[in-house]
Amino acid sequence: MAATTHSVLKTAAWAAGSAAAAGAGAFAYGSLIERNLFGIRTEEVAVLPPGSQPMRVLHLSDIHYVPGQARKTRWLQSLADLEPDLVVNTGDNLSHLEAVPPLLEALKPLLRFPGVFVPGSNDYYAPVLKNPFTYFTSPSKLRKNPAKLPFGEMFSAFGNAGWVGLANRNQSLVLNGMRLDFSGVDDPHLKRDRYAGFPAGSSTSDSARHLRIGVAHAPYQRVLDYFTDGGAQLILAGHTHGGQVCIPGYGALVSNCDLPTWRAKGLTDWEHRGRTVPLNVSAGIGTSRFAPVRCAGRPDPVRHTPPPPERPVTAP
Image 1 (cartoon, rainbow, N blue to C red):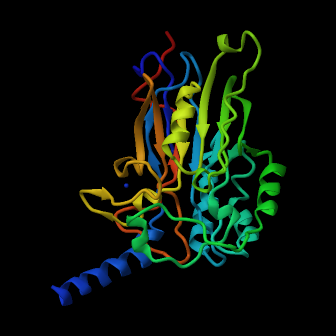
Image 2 (image 1 turned 30 degrees about the vertical axis):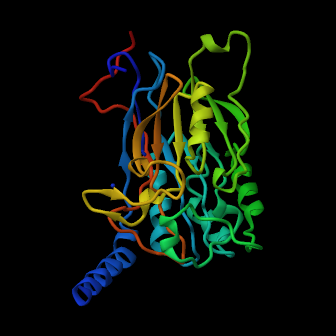
């Protein structure tokens, strides 16, 4: 789609002794430095109808908040300076039983903006210590009798602030004079997803400006397929942590779902039954508190911003 005929949506939204020493150095870098190198990735996707106003959309995912994360708190609060028109939260906000109050304090400046959210497994259940090598054989699985997190308190706070929960439901919002039709699912990683379709609207709703957005925590292929078949024009997801520990120049080794690893972070085109939809997977902001490491996979919220002045967008 040409930028001259469409408004542009930018998504704010990257033997033994010597090997052991190198591994220890990489672990130290990933745990002490890279996991705290907070930044913002920007992508351009021309998906808005002709003549639409640009939108500033902030996509947050996988915060995995732990009490005491002062640097993360300050950075999350600073994101309100972006003045987003919409915040999309794709789950896994928690990583500790006592994380909800400080998480809500960190997100307080962003809760004044319109938003939508879907849950991830680490909204419902606390993380546990696992052997990291199991990720190379299959996606992680929920342990028996996991500790439950106080997600009800968090979801209620989101709802009281006006954020719309999209777990296995759809809803339309009007922003900047355009209708956004959302379809969301509960966490596919826990097999809680039940596709609700997109809002039907009135008999003439298709003639009005609108954009269909699919929202999920984990980008399993079945989820991407039913969003695509349902007419999605953009799909937003998280969960993968971008591979979390990646090889420079190669990328992710795992995606922790059935998504190909080369799609574990960033903007790609998802194709199914003749339709192609932009898919943006956020590498997330945090990590499990039991695996506080990132290597060649920095924290990765996504920003959507208006088109830059040097590339004006004109309606046809």
